[in-house]
Amino acid sequence: MIKYLLGVDGGGTGTRVLLATRSGAILAQASAGPSALGQGVAAAWEQILAAVRQAFAVAGLTVPADWSACALGAGLSGVHHQPWCDAFVATNPGFARIAVENDAYIALLAAHGGQPGAMVAAGTGSVGEALYADGTRHQVSGWGFPVGDEGSGAWLGLRAMAHAQEAMDRRLPGGPLATRIHQQCGSTRDTLQQWCAGAGQSEYAQLAPTVFDCAASDPVAEALLAEAAAALERMATALDRRGTLPLAICGSVGRQLLPRLASATRARAIASPQDAVHGALTLIHQSLEQSP
Image (tube, rainbow, N blue to C red; front, top):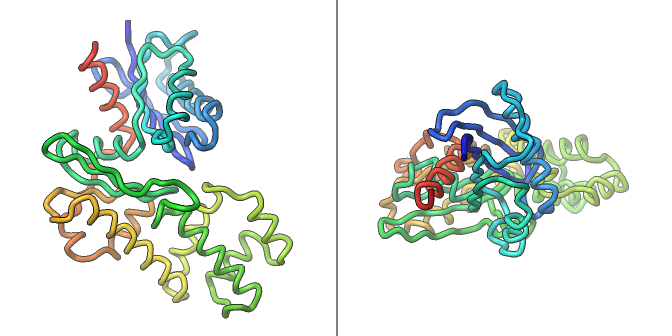
């Protein structure tokens, strides 16, 4: 018998878990490292289970010897790649039920409570999704780092690094942004190359706060943020060209970019009442209701 529900929000920076009773009362929350499927299915399960165990400990409950009394709903970055999704489901460590969706959909569920609406999220990566009145869905962006995920933290960090490299070469004048990147990542050609050789999506995303910090003093940083905001605008337009759906702007980068969006976009933007991880709980609730 299923006694506990688990909601998982897994991305390229970290994993968040909510532990709830079967009726939906939240008992605890916990976190662990990245669980984006692009970083490996085994690694994703390792981080998810670490967060789940921590949640049981926080709730003062004994960690189950197996997971047969638990049902898990997960919104994971990388689920759109079917081989990764299939491998994740196939290696279920014993949960009585799992429901897996992309991370955009659980953010959409959290933002609009399962009702029609649009959502644009920008954090480590970026993605947008809409649910229409006829029940159909449409997703934009979310193609993955480094080619896609426009306007995201990793996207900003990658471009900040490119600018820092040009400044180090004296191809472009330096400034506060380049100086800060050199301080964080390497002040010589060799050390900067070494940092880049070992950096992935998460490491580049960690440079995004520096872009925001330098915006007031460096026109290059300001231009990068304007370009990121324009990318989110294009996502919102692609999801709802008539601008009639309520729009949630989610994610740490998305929320910081909100004041830079067009006034018409800001006017229909709503504050998401819950974090995406709550949408993962809604996902497993729906799965159980549809097939108890």
